Length: 118
Image 1 (cartoon, rainbow, N blue to C red):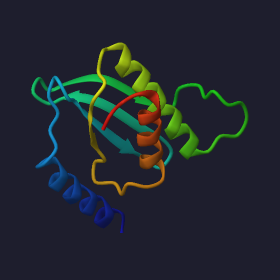
Image 2 (image 1 turned 90 degrees about the vertical axis):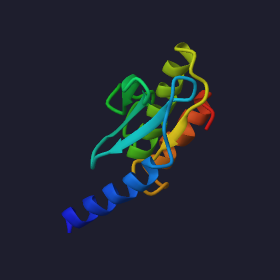
Image 3 (image 1 turned 30 degrees about the vertical axis):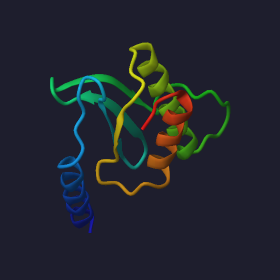
């Protein structure tokens, strides 16, 4: 079952990547979601370089028990702050074949609240 889900996600990602590319003016924000954590990168596809990367492994603002969705939101905010410091305001969102709900949606909302446009 796991291999089927993974292969379907990879097919969806390939279909998305045909349409989505990032350049130096508008880089690509790509998300990777594991069972425990979420990772995000801002990539310039013309140079093939990662400009900024973040994860939910950084220290949370809230003390106590925090959900994965809240961690994703904070990771999105942190990514947006780092992008604004590097003078990146507009990005193209690449959900990497994941459905746009839950932690992926939360990361996107955090990045939008932090000041990124997409």
